[in-house]
Image (tube, rainbow over all chains, first blue to last red; front, side, top):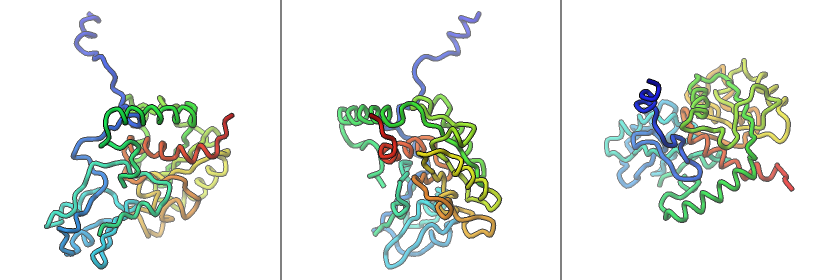
Amino acid sequence: MFKAIKLMRVKKGILTSPYPVEPDSYGPSFKGQPIVDMKKCTQCRECVKNCPTSAIQIDNKRLTFDLGLCIYCGECAKVCSPKAITITPNFELSTKDKNHLQVVFE
Amino acid sequence: MSDNSLINQNTTADEINKAGNELKKKIDLVIGRSLGIRQVDAGSCNACEWEVNALAYPFNDMERFGLHVVASPRHADIVLVSGPITRNMLRGLHQTVIATPDPKWIVAMGSCAISGGIFKDSYAVENGCDNIIPVDLYIPGCPPSPLAMIQGIMVLLDKMEEKIIRK
C-alpha cells in the first residue's frame, strides 16, 4: 500500500531554486522595482499624491524614487493615466550604500 | 539598479555557467558553510519574519550555503534588523549589537528598517536602523522576498572577505 502511495504522491527531482549560481525570477506579476518612462510622463503629480509613503518626488522633469521608502504596493502604476510607471519583477535591489537606493529618472 | 544583479541575464549560457561557478567558489571560501544570523524584531509587522522563515523552506534552502538562524546574539555573525526601531526595542537592539562578537555585520531588512517606511515620522519610532547603528547592507522590499535576501548576502560577500582572514 505504501508503495502505491509513494508512486502516486512522491515526486522526484530537485525543488530548490539554484538562484545565486543561476538566474531565477518570480513570475511577471511579482511587484519589484518600479520603472518610469519619462517620455510618457506628463508631470500630473498623481503618483506623488497617491503614494502612501511619499517615496516619489518630482521636480523639474526629474522623478526620484526612494526604494528605501517604497513599500512596493503598485499604487503609482495604478493611478498613472499615461501609463508611464510600470512595476517590474526585478527584486535584486540590495546595496551597501544608501545613496544607491535613490533612483533618478530623467 | 540592474548593475546590482549578480549574474547578467542577457549573457549566454556559457558565461552564466562560468560566473555561477566563480560565485560558488567565492561563497564556499568566504562563508565557509557557517554563518549565523540573529534576527531582531524591532517593531516589525511580522511580514519580514515570515520571509526569514521562508528562507528555510526547501525551495530557498539557506542551509545549502551554511546560513542558519541562531538563538543567541553571541553565536551570530549577522544581525538582521527588521521593523522601524520602536522606542521600546531601542535598548534591546543596542544590547544585541553589543553582545554580538566581531566580525559582525548589521543588515537592515525591509523598508521599515531602512528609512521608517510606512511608519516614518511617527512619535514612537526612530526612522530606521542607520540613525542608531552603522548598517552594512540595505535590503529594500516590503517585505523583501527570500531570493532578494539571498542576493543581499551575496552582495555582502566582498565586505566579509575584507574582515575574515584565511590563510
